[in-house]
Length: 165
Figure 1 (tube, rainbow, N blue to C red):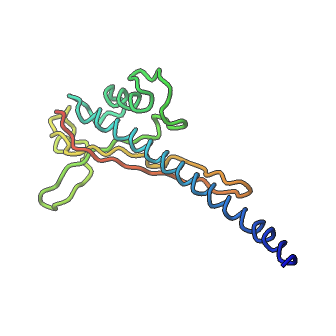
Figure 2 (cartoon, rainbow, N blue to C red; figure 1 turned 180 degrees about the vertical axis):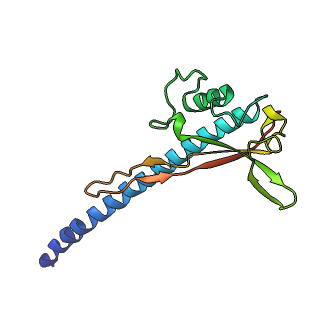
Figure 3 (cartoon, helix red, strand yellow; figure 1 turned 135 degrees about the vertical axis):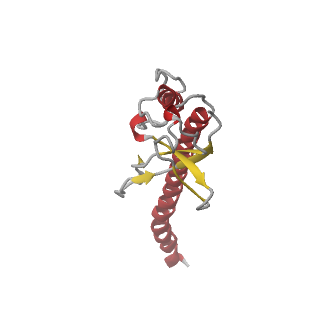
């Protein structure tokens, strides 16, 4: 019986690093999930803010309502003076797209900026949906000791009905 006492120590020495690696991995998966949820919630805030505004010109990249909505979603203030909710996420990374339901094709499609499309400044109709996304992705790098991992690109997308005119 005395010759087997060392086996327990060897087995524990082999299992402890594996258990630690699994625990650290679970924490990192939780971190990535939390960041994804936070980014998606930020995009949803932006989409709902713009979708309830009146006289938004989606065909103008410098529209004041869209710029204010992006600042509000990222910092909680429309003048971009607050602390960022998601570190490293900038206004330039966010894309606001408009869509309209095509009854003939029975599908959603991107609405073009023309007088027959969604250019309301030139007599076009309002869009049906807003889509807010991060096309190039938001980069998150998992940190696991002794392992070098590539960054993960999070690409959340939010679609909300447009209620403004």
